Length: 146
Image 1 (cartoon, rainbow, N blue to C red):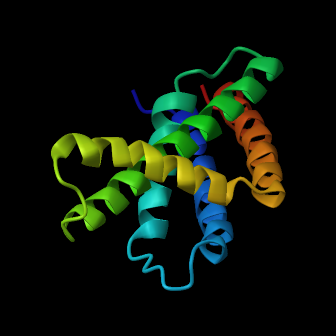
Image 2 (image 1 turned 45 degrees about the vertical axis):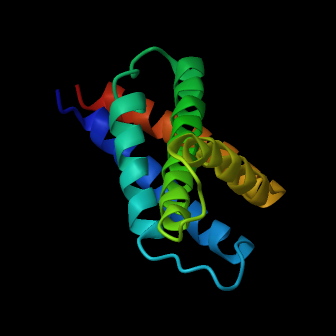
């Protein structure tokens, strides 16, 4: 059911995804073609906010902070997973893998590599602050507009 809290959570995580995408792009190799990288991450942020954070509102301040942390964690997990799948498909189209199992295993390897690339202090601090702010703003929206 659509609520103001779900909408606010989706918007908050979309903003966090947009900013983090801008922080991640300089960390990638120079020859990287980003294509739909930013819009796809914004959509993932919208979905994570709507699905994960939006339904867990109204439980207090501590739960709101935990809700924000959970939402950002899920957003990053989905984002890395989707981008790793995209990279695997790109490599599979160049006949890099011998069979389907090798390609599936490569998703996890690529995702781990992407996770290591973006595991920097500025990104981590921004995700932490963005999670807390998103959780508190979503909680406020849930209490304000019932």
